[in-house]
Length: 253
Image (cartoon, rainbow, N blue to C red; front, side, top):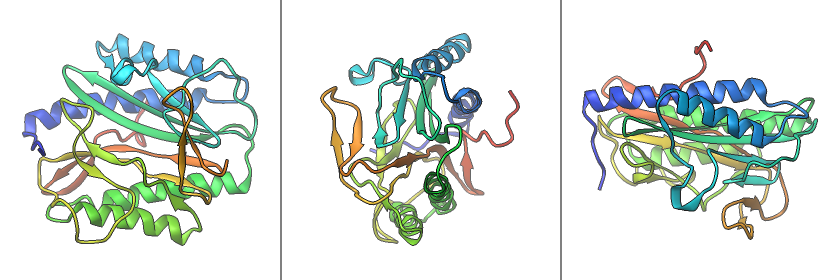
């Protein structure tokens, strides 16, 4: 069931979204060679708890950390570790926060130190996929309009999208209907209506679109060992168009 949010509920989601944006903007500044992802996890948890919120991911279906930190060939759901980041890595960080019963969810991918041209292009393409999808998140469009645009942007740049994992509705629950795939056909799927709140999250890979879940039951890697990037925003569908609730671009911390 798709849950339509009231204006006051969307305002609460704005607050949780802003908290998530603060977390990711801080992590973006701190992620550099020599830093561990466990350290980034601790930073995120500290910010969330001090704001009077609860990490959305920690304990969710048994996930043991506040952030998902996925490095290089890891697509999503990677565990933070004490292995230092190194020059040339690509790191995706996904985080959620539950503030007063409402969830915000967002992800970024950051280059670590000096990276290859391919990594720069992959990050640029994945972020472009996200914003192209967001532009289609308008009333009376359909989910497939978002999905197909994400896929076409990736393909036009010579990359591919992961099909096993999708975006989702969000609100009082971290994952709600509808699912938002990163591939599909225009004018198909659920109709978007004012008051819907969704998390759009393209996962883009160099080549192979298959995914393998490792023995920890969470960390998911590319089938060919190629690199992966991931971006995500929580977005409200309004009569005036899409509103990014986790926008960090003009955020001062």
